[in-house]
Amino acid sequence: MPDNCVTILNSVTRFLDRQHGLYINGQWQASQAEQRLAVYNPADGQQISSTADANAADVALAVSSAHQAFTAGVWAQRLPAERERILLRYADLLEQHCEELAQLETLEQGKSINISRAFEVGCTLNWMRYTAGLTTKITGQTLDVSIPMPPGARYQVYTRKEPIGVVAGIVPWNFPLLIGMRKVMPALAAGCSIVIKPSETTPLTLLRMAELASEAGVPPGVFNVVTGRGAVCGKALTEHPLIAKVSFTGSTPVGKGIARAAADRLTRVTLELGGKNPAIVLQDADLQQVIEGLMAGSFLNQGQVCAASSRIYIEAPIYDRLVAGFEQAVKSLSVGPGMDGSTQINPLVSLAHRNKVAAYLDDARNKRAELISGSAGPDAQGFYIPPTLVINPDDSLNLAREEVFGPVVNLIRVADAEEALRKANDTDYGLTASLWTTSLQAAMAYTPRIQAGTVWVNTHTLIDANMPFGGFKQSGSGRDFGPDWLDAYTESKSVCIRY
Ligand code: NAD
Image (cartoon, rainbow, N blue to C red; front, side, top):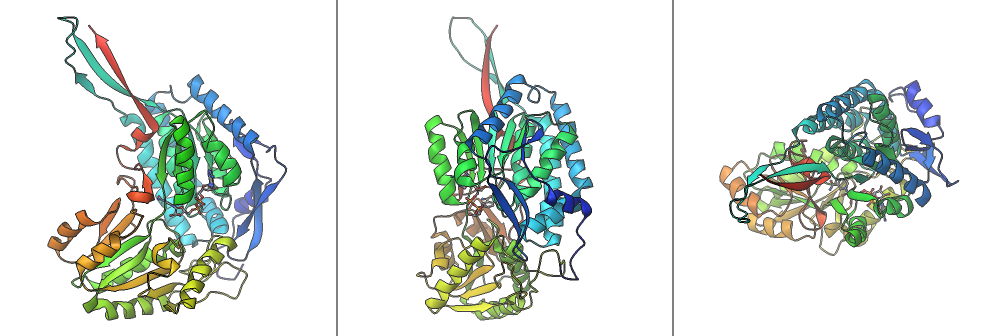
């Protein structure tokens, strides 16, 4: 590790050195598959740990354990206040181990230790406490009805929200702890059992969280973790007949495959998928605010954020000034390992993903696009890509329409707001967007015309536990977060009583 890097805790070193198994029925179990999956540090390409490569038999065991726990009612039938207390204790345990979890995340994922502390751990804590609170607020309705027979009979209807059953959670690699816990917590708050599969690239933090769940008092079988490849372990999990609901966050192609398989058994599915998110900058915007907001919106976590701004449409009168401002900002970014908290751009998650992003930039160079890049990063074996602006890209470039998921952002000159809106909406995606203006009239007029699940004004990438989030079009289906979040983890039952 270079000199400026934080000192790795002994507990982190011990965790990395473990022979990780699968967390099933409240204990570690060896996988039935012999092969193991290596975990790498993106900052230097070195292997730091390994995890089990679970097969279908392992997954069946985990689902069966979750199903038994669910049908036995060991969690679902606890008083809501008891579940809430345990989930709050679970959040306290994460807080006690916050530095350990933050370091593990930076070591396996590559992001800055500051982002791991603030987002992976800090935001996860907020989400955990918010969701724990929902446990005691699950409500139905009482309904007066007008059933006419037999004459004179009276009826009262009420609805109950009941836990849906065993949930399969499938997690991507960009925010492994945060996104993972955004599946675990609503499932547990609703009274479900869950089997969760982290990305094969970043499996470590959810394995640690499984142990902490047991320590908090979550009964055996209620929270299980299987690690393995998507095409084997993920497929076996999402297609298992005892799975009542799949909560998937990941790429659009994989999400579509999961939805197709789920259609066979009408398994409930929530899909949080990819994005190619526009930002529209009107000429009356505060340019300093735009540069600060969209630098963060585009380069947070090296642009490996589903909600990241990746196409910035700028009205012509301010275009040159803004491009100059972005150029200065990009060239001033320091690039280095995530464990060095003074760096702002860190390696991408894996060699394969680095090569994918590099291929987009090669395609752009081959087609003579104008690129402005910042520092290329340290001369190490890490998976670095320099932060890059693409100036007025032609539509023939692969990066013009596809999700790059890296530190690359397109700056596009438009004549006016109408052209910006047309181009912003001309995409299969519809996850997020932002509008930058000091005019209240413009904000109120244009936000309804932007096709995205979340539209920000004068900010980008702000996501809150109490703010529903999800995609229009091919960015997903269903909404996470907010007061109605648990609806997706419950079934509504109408009870009709004659009296
Ligand atoms: P991915 O789709 O390749 O993998 C996501 C998860 O699915 C991994 O755990 C993987 O092992 C698993 N998987 C792969 N094939 C599977 C299969 N056939 N059956 C079941 N599971 C399978 O995505 P990724 O590369 O890990 O993550 C990046 C993508 O995630 C980007 O497209 C990004 O936009 C998206 N994302 C979306 C959101 C959101 O909230 N909308 C949030 C974060 C990331």
